[in-house]
Amino acid sequence: MIPLRLKKGREEAIRGGYPWIYAGDIIESSELLLLPPGGLVAIETHRGEAIGTGYYNARSQIACRVLALGQEKIDLAFLTSRIEKALAQRQRLIGAPYCRLIHSEADGLPGLLVDRFGDILVAQAGTAGMEQLQPLWMRALEDLLHPQAILLRNDTTARKLEGLKQEVIAARGNIPSLVEVQENGCIYLADVMHGQKTGWFYDQRDNRRMIAELAKGKTVLDVYAHSGGFGLLAAKYGAAQVALADSSRLALDLAAQAAVRNHLASLHYMQGDAFETMERLAGEKQQFDIVLADPPAFVKSRKDIAAGLKGYEKVTRLAAALVLPGGLLFVASCSHYASRSSFDKAVQDGIAKAGREGAILKRTGAAPDHPCHPRLPQSEYLKGILLRLV
Image (cartoon, rainbow, N blue to C red; front, top):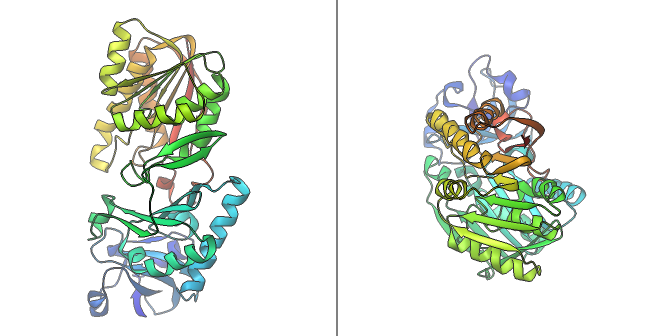
């Protein structure tokens, strides 16, 4: 294995559990130049003392990602062990085969995401290193779970930064056009082949249940509804009326089909731009007991932070105007570049610009099958805030 030597003083962070090594931390060598993207390296101090093992890609901003400290052989047994630990944790915390099974660095498998839909797995390899290790982790998944099918949703923009192709591949078995999701006692439908991300967002599981438990007998507006994660569960928990708004007709059609499977009525579907929809509803003087706004990431890079925060402010301003006095507003951000404090401020500014006042009832994050790496604050990407408005 080719050695990767760190500059003097850079080893303490790695020994302390930090999983990323940047190009500026590495002593240049001709051997590294010859290594194919994603090749395994032995991480060493500047004196040549062994620290651990990782994979290296000179094309990436994060030149090396640490797989293990100490003397670990990165083989089928290693990957199987990591996946077994992740599986055991999900079985304890979630207890159903519908979850995020592997969550990258937090599960010791940097660059790999795997979502489980019963006996169908949807995986994303976001780095050259995980691409190189794909035959091994695929074998481990098959040996442990015996899935009916495995879909590779390798179409993320992050792969461009690694010099990888964006592609969607049915790697094993036949992928159904629609996959059933069971969550919080509700049935949903996901398009894992063409839908956003892996086709479903398990990270909002606990937030959906929180809102549903508050929704009995209430009117609910779910903006950026996608395929009905919040809205359908609110209806199942006894909401008096639920309106789902999304720009995607496909997503709303999936929500409508799932509503039939759950024997749910009193649902209304609105296709269109979220800002325009909320402005129209405000013009019609419509208000709801509970308004939810879970937009896509507005801050996709550091250069987008200022504009993205303005976006969250605008979402909040428009949504707050639609909340009845004494009602609830829930706003979420999945932008890891937007800090919790900056997101909170954007929400508070939006409420003030809507001429409303409110009290924060709860700040939330992702469900426990999306663990955060303790050394990577940015892995705590999902942020939610529940407020009561007056």
